[in-house]
Each structure stands twice: as structure tokens, then as C-alpha cells.
Image (cartoon, rainbow, N blue to C red; front, side, top):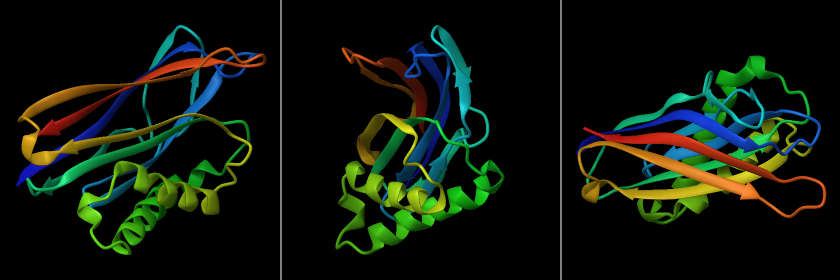
Length: 184
């Protein structure tokens, strides 16, 4: 059994999706070991090409549990550029509901401990879609990362999630999200 933490650090923008200026970047998704699940929803960060920003509300530690060594930690995130206004005053309730939806979804499958990280995204997206109207926001990238707890060395492991779109006639983008997986 080990204490596992996942911490969102920063986002680097090399090119924005919005051709008229900065993006309103945010992440949603979940982190789960199959039993413990936390929803993720960061508040939008105003960011422009060439900038690095730290995650504020909704960022920081997004998972902190004692996890058995035979589990696989799943980090499932989706990045968006917000194009429509949302009611961010309900942020805490939304994060709780995302976590509950992921837990319920994983609880409905035969072996939630071995479910792939990609299975978490539909549960999280469905919950967010019911809470907020996301159909007007631009999806920038998806992350489905898995970390076998037993083979993860003790210590901090800095991770970089790079995603981009190039060659579009209207819009392209390039981002990198830095996060840490900590085992103690």
C-alpha cells in the first residue's frame, strides 16, 4: 500500500486555438485507481502563445489516496478552450459530481481495478456535459495515462502531456501540461 498523489502543475502554450488572441484553457476528467476516483475540473486560465501559467482553482492536488500495490492508477484528462460562458460558481459541486459519475460507471463494470484509463473519459465527459453546456467549447486534446502502482518507484515523477493540432486552414494549437505523480 502506498500513498499516491497526482498534482497538476502548469500549462505551456506555444500556439493558441483562438486565431484572434488568447485561449481560456481548462481541463476536465478524472483520476482513479478503480476504487477511489476524483473528478477534475480546473477553472479557465487566460493564456496566450509564449506563456506558461500555473493551475489555480481545480488544479494542484487532484488525487491523494492510499492505493494497494496491485492497482493501476489511471489519469484521464481532456483539455478545452472555453468559448461559452459557464456558471463557475458551482465548481465544487461539479467536481464532486464528476467523481461520483466515474465511481458509479467503474462500479458497473466487472473489474474496475483493471479498466483502462480511456474508459474513465466517457464517464467524466457525460457528467460534465449534463452539468455544463460544453458543446461550444473546443476540445484541444485527450490524455489517458496509466501507472502500475507496484512498479512505480517511490518519489516524484514529473510527467509532460504534449498535444497539438497543425495544418488546419483556420486554427491550430500547441500545448504542454506538466503534472506530477508522487508515490510515498
